[in-house]
Length: 100
Image (cartoon, rainbow, N blue to C red):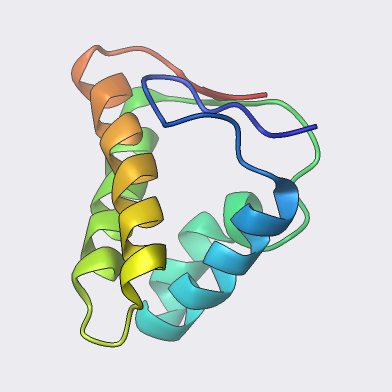
C-alpha cells in the first residue's frame, strides 16, 4: 500500500520510494536542511502526517532546492519537484498538507 500525498502529488508513493528519495535528498541538502525533512523522508514514516501550511512551504522549498542540485539524478529530481509542488499548493491554499 502506498503513501498518498495531498494537493496533487502524482499517485501514491511506496514507502521504499520515499525512503530512496530521502537518500538522494540527504546527499544534496545541508545537514540542517536534511534534519528538517528527515521525519518524512528518512525511511521511518509509517503514520499519518498533517503538516501546517508554513512547514509545508518550507519543505516544498527544500525539495525544489534539492531537485535543482547538479548532483540530483533527473528521475529523483522529478519526484522531488512533484512532491514539492504539492507542498506549495497546500501552503498557498493555507491548508494542512496530508500524508496518509
